[in-house]
Length: 206
Image (cartoon, rainbow, N blue to C red):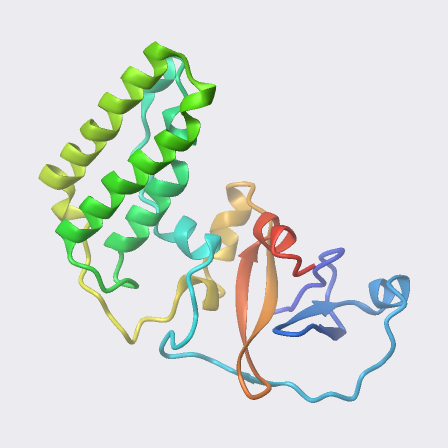
């Protein structure tokens, strides 16, 4: 697998070491950033378990089953956008990467949707509020009654999707730009992980 520069996406030649992260970079971008050579040695590992790693957006997108909502979109209310993060987390909670009982995941989903809606109330009119109040209950009823086919038992030996290289091509086809970053897990030991470029920018990793 070719490691790509996080700035220009050309083959990387070096690493930039940050406090808890390390990112690949090519010589040209290294010179443009005016970064000096470092002799620091970085030990990288391939994880067989997810000790100390929190799921990132890449992990959640990889486990999203994307049920969609054509009716809501026809009504002109973008509920998928409003509840997007809650749906991503619920799908991740249903995946074999998370150790949570199905009923607990569903209750957590309902609470997350209610919190999201509460945070948006000032931006919505009465009809939108009423509709979305109804919708979060409908979503909860659907997953509670028909979600068993999507729920997976926890597998502690399964590496997070962000530590596996295969999914990057899927995201590329969907137009999601991804970057590869070394994440510190302990004592100068790093593991390669994939991040969406948007999340990496938001976290200040680039």
